[in-house]
Length: 267
Image (tube, rainbow, N blue to C red; front, side):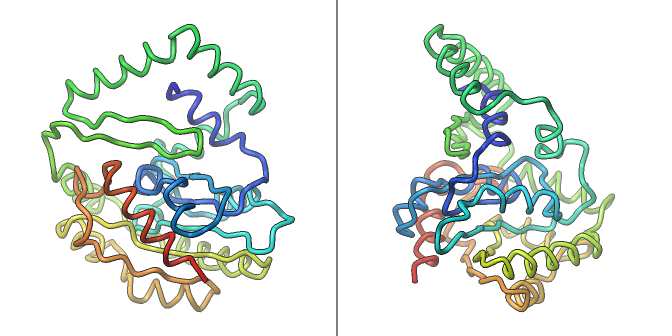
């Protein structure tokens, strides 16, 4: 599947899911719906994560709207990190793709099928991965369930995210207004009968230190506020997972994390 079709499919999903996963690129790469389904016993799951996504009311409302209104326990799974509370970035993938004119889902699937038959999708995917390989970036494979599975290959910068995060946190700060808006949205969504699970995506020790320091988030307080608003917090031991750049998981670690989160969702 090409990059364009993958993101078009993200924003053209119907309201048919039992569980919707939300968050930024750590979530987009970090949770596999198929493996979450196996561990949780829930059937229809979609990964609605986007690059540089902000957990504001607009995005969370869209995510909630993908849940099937006729099921007994509609659920959101939220990956929460400080970058989700920055002012919306120009590279916010959700803002970009949700503002585009996107064909109907059926038309996108037909286009994807035709591109596969014509080998156009394979050519584009190969070109993208070759470019990533020359830059020392991970190879990626897109799944129709919204998961971007990554194979890091020979990563040149294992702490690349820590370096960029340090620069970001010197220029930006977590916005209290967005945190408040997020917690209000959690409360409102919970009142609608939707279950919400929150977790902190695992990252390296240096990134955890940055994210919990000046300009970051006190996750102990945030988890308490999240539960007071009606959510359920899942504690993830970051030491059990190895990222390829300080924050993002390869496909093997993502499958393991999906199983842990899924198991925590069981009654």
